[in-house]
Length: 228
Image: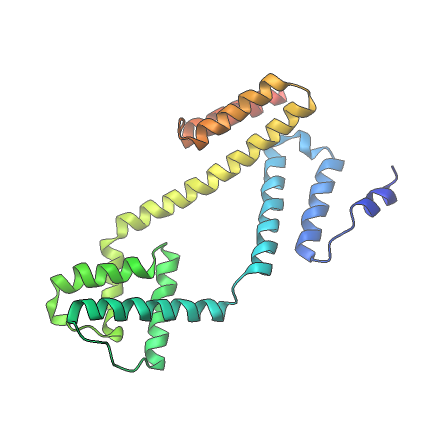
C-alpha cells in the first residue's frame, strides 16, 4: 500500500483536534512507537483526551445556559428549604446582584466537587441551627463570603479527599489504557494466556479485589516483561 492509499483510507477529519489526534496516532504506528509502552501509553492518553474534548465541545451545554440552569436550581432549592424552615414563602425579588452571588457560589462549589444541594443542606440543617441570628436567611446572606468560607473550612477534609479520589480515578483510567495496550500486544502475538492474565487483573481492579497501588505494580511488571 502506498502512502497515498493510506491517506485515502484515513482521510484527515475536518475537526482540527480530531485531525491532530489521528495524525499523531498514525505517526506513532509508522515510527514503531507503539512498540515502546512507556511512550505509547501517553499517545493513547492524548488521543483519548482529544476524543473527549471533541465530544464535549459538540455536546456541551453553552456556558450561559449552564449558568442559568445552576442559578435556577439554587433558587428553587433555596426557596424550598426556606419554606421548610420558616413556614413562609421567600417573596423577596431575586435581583441581579443575587444572580451574580449565586453564580460565584456555584462556581466555587463545582471547583470543589460539591453540589448546590450539599451546600444548602449544610446551610439550613447545620449553619443556621448553630447561628440563629442569621434567621431568616436571605440569598445575599447565604451567598456571603463568610458563609462560603465557613462551609469550605468545615469541609476541608472532604475537599482533600475528593481531590485525591479524582487524582486516583485519573490514574486508574491511565493504567486501564496501558493494560489495553498490553492486551492488544498479547493478541497480536497470539498469546492468549497472557491476554487472559491481563484481563483478569483489569477485572480484579474493577471489582476492587486489588487496590490502585497493586494494580499499578502489576501493570508496570507486565510492561517490563513485554520489553524483555
